Image (cartoon, rainbow, N blue to C red; front, top):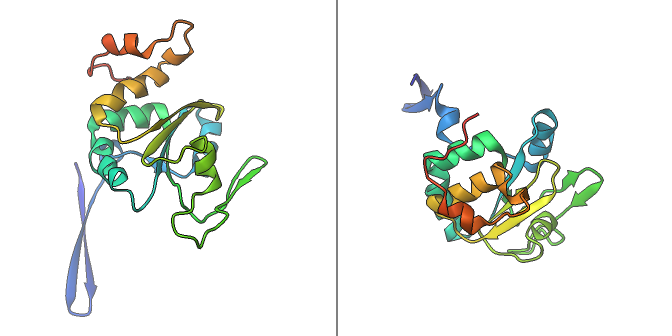
Amino acid sequence: MKKIFLTILISSFTFIVFSQENNEEKDKIEWITFEEAIEANSKEQKKFFIDVYTDWCGWCKRMDATTFKDETIIQLLNENYHTVKLDAEMKDTVRLGNDTFVNEKPNQKRHPHQLAIALLNGKLSYPSVVFLDEKGNMIQPLAGYQKAENLAPILNFFADNEHLKEDANFEEYLKNYSNEKIKKN
């Protein structure tokens, strides 16, 4: 792994900044905005994985520090999904096609954004993850903290389109699931 060392001189203080190249993209999830995901999907069709979080949510922070640092989760998400981090209380306006989503009370503490409300079907719980198909249609919202070993089979279940099979049964899928089953593209 190639490392770059940058030395920044400010007054009489020296700051050394470490930056990694080459494998950096493989070491973390490639989080993008919802708008960027829509644009990326026009070039490469993938399902969408949306992490709906808030800044004050301790379990959201724990999921960032554990689940989203797991090598298997990173690989599954980067290879099979457009990954979006969505602050459920953001102040920004989001335009998706002909629809506009806003935070109706942006100055009110802990007021949810319309997009978060829509994605979570009005059931606001943080953290939550939302799965959308390649066309942006809802597959499944999933509320609560997810451990990596629990999230990996779910990621594969949707990535493999198992949920579309007539006899789709996640419990049966889970019985045959192995942690070595990682999507290889």
